[in-house]
Image (cartoon, rainbow, N blue to C red; front, side, top):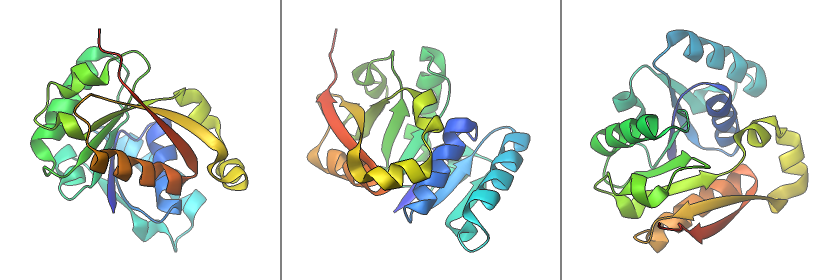
Length: 183
């Protein structure tokens, strides 16, 4: 499975590291070349040269999501940013691609309604700071005991939930799903 991660800041780097260690092929994208360079150095130090072929770097969203099964955005948790990235991902990713967005404040139902794939959208409702501070060895030691919450819109399919569950299980978390509370 191929995972596209949009944004090479702390969360994007951490997710890239976790996904690569779990055996996924990762494409990390950021509009800022300096962020990609820092991410490349960080991942090289953490993964070592043998695992680096698992991680590729993209300078455009289109390049990152072209063959992605999962696309995770790491843009700020602001409505305008999330709407913009969801529209871009929806337009550029293959129809099979599931979109995951970290958000504590926004409704995944509302965000998903702006796409042609509402059934393939999921919100990661986690404290991003806690996630990025979690050490990989800590996650590995506790196995799947670290719970994370994911929210789905009413249209989410079983296939979407299964794919997202598999990803988070392999990365070392225990995903818990709940339906979005539509206002």
